Length: 145
Image 1 (cartoon, helix red, strand yellow):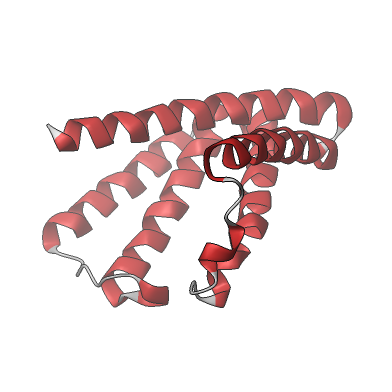
Image 2: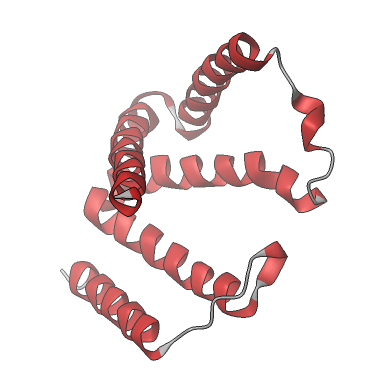
């Protein structure tokens, strides 16, 4: 049951990501890439700031024990939303997300297999490798159009 609940949360994030990329693509075409990223981060930052203050009183000091590279997540987020906002109106949602997902899967394989940057090692098994091959085949089928 827990697996289905977690999968549902991840699926909701996937739906939100597709909608966000499409909306950012609309903004990108009308007002520009930098402006669409600013609107995305400003509105999201403002909302989470209010929620954080209401729920916890703003406990930002609690993260001092995190490794330095964990604090680059905001910069990585800018890259994520910027590349999706830029590529989606130019490639279409399916092609942009397929490339995006394949890159995520390949990076995930490296991080998991070698236990990089603080991850617990999860070796690349033959079954997982076959899954990666299927994902790569999907990318080829979608981009060959």
